[in-house]
Image 1 (cartoon, helix red, strand yellow):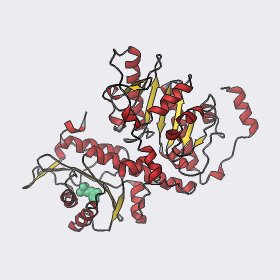
Image 2 (cartoon, protein in one colour):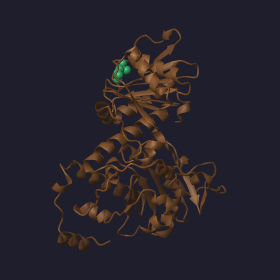
Image 3 (cartoon, helix red, strand yellow):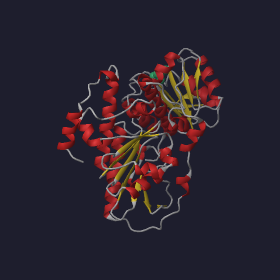
Image 4 (cartoon, protein in one colour):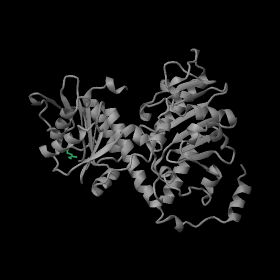
Length: 428
Ligand code: 13P
């Protein structure tokens, strides 16, 4: 359901449940609030299990104080109120104790938002507020000072993170994006020195070209198209649930027998995409009234050059991302199943898929079903949606296994002969 049609209490429950289920806060930690169109704050209750909240437990705060009395509002109400006073465009506030951001709060260091383009684009610049005791008016004062600078994210020394935005949906996307990026940065540091991008490099990912496509004329939808809309929608949700996609990252497309393809839309929360939101693309034209993913041109070019490819996924799963931020090789040569499913995975320099789509598309072949993009993730293809998805999951599990090693040099490689044996028994 569209968030702007949901009651504030229901939004608070939906997002606190999502944060808890994603492992981004504890039963007792974190709080959320919304400023409604009457100027009243709706806030999560204090001292209640954040994993099992109900709408009746949400507390409305009017000019006369809390309206409901069976539960008390969050102990952090003072800082939520101070943040709403600090800037008129803030309509939702999110506070959580998510592990990777806590690690940065403990180091009193900001995560680098210039490592991954989507982090910079979604989160903007971020700041750190000096330590103040939880629940105190002083904490509200120090946070309000930071939000007056126009930022959406403030880390709190030795405490956690606060995000303020025009909607709870946006606040959640910012929060999830930054927490994931912070986790990737911590993992990448174990592999080498993470490569930071300049603003000019990040601008490459801010392309607007996908918004300027001409529109297709309407025609009846075939059963093939309707079936594919259903399958892609299910796969999108699954990819989010398996942490291969997130609210603000992940693109999927699949081609139909007439050469047209369906692709996920631009800028939408991947968990909320329905069958009708997918965008039909045919010969450079897009379905009217919709905006396809920024990846639409590279997907079109890959389909054009590779008749055997019927499905494509762009993703930024955390463990694969850690490798793409450093010069550390990610190969699949030492595990039989990843090897026969993924073979070679070349690495394209940052931005190559935007600036050289033809050459990027030419990298794919029967033994190269996927490529890594520096600082930008992976493009994986398949003969159908299920194969592309499976390859993505296998690549991420493998990257994760490598990161679980005490160090990469502990890995014992398969011999040339063992690989030759696999090539013989599992020919491409
Ligand atoms: P509440 O349960 O009172 O919202 O407190 C949780 C918390 O995270 C304090 O910073």
